[in-house]
Length: 213
Image 1 (tube, rainbow, N blue to C red):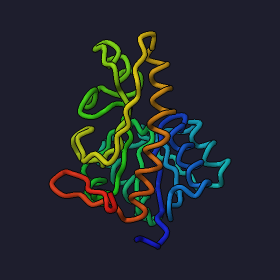
Image 2: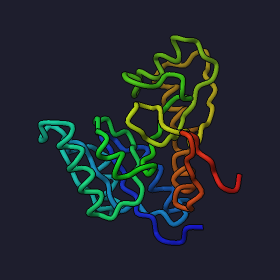
Image 3: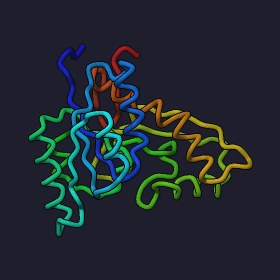
């Protein structure tokens, strides 16, 4: 069992609803020894920064548009997190492309939540409402959310947790998005973070094994 405090950096690009779920979980003592010590936003004036401020969490804005390449932005991002002693990186609605520099410096230490049951409705172009539009167009009866470890290939990293959510006949992309957030994303993201902070996640052959299961 890992007893050392685990410093978590949460990367955001928007409103920060998943950040809020993590903040609330930490307040309830549900992140184990995890502490959200840093929020990094890819653009200024997003509401996620206000959430950080309200909860006395250090925040930094690293505007993507100020860097002329993905490589330079990725280096600045990785440098910033290393300087802050980050142990775990959580992508919470972070819509900026990063390169292998970040993955190599934080191997198996980056988590992302995706609003579908991977490998369905994932990969390039599947983000935000696009995911739920595609699910409804296909007529699936069940969708959900996946927390996975981030690797260079989009949405292809080892799966940590998944939770299924019913799709209703009168759903719109917006109603499905909200139900998946409430019933799945906001539950399994804090749970996955807790598992990491407790040292219970190991990765072998692109699969996650959870100790104690």
